[in-house]
Image (cartoon, rainbow, N blue to C red; front, side):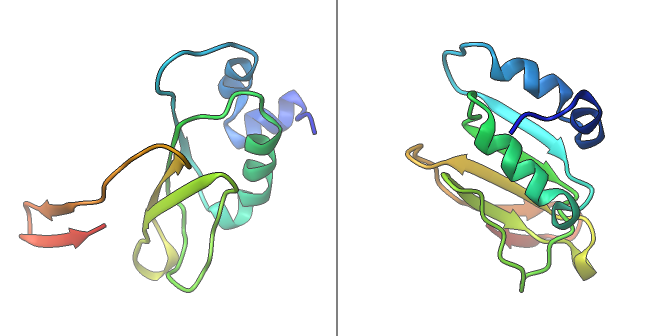
Length: 116
């Protein structure tokens, strides 16, 4: 499935599309402000699936996911931190086969540990 220029711009994927046609060496990272992965998830998954260039790491912001929702991208492991009340939230998607570790991050403001 190819995406029209309008669709790419609406999804914020126009620049990534040109990367799909290039040959990259090394670790590749893609960042996308999803503004609701629920609303745009199918298009995003289709884009990743049809793209010849598969990013090694995908960083998603404003996922708007809730803990009860199951979100997967075939070929990727997903580490996520959902926002409060289904707003905000982030996810890091690591292509399967790439070694990674999760660790605790401390919030300096409140001294609260975030276990991700």
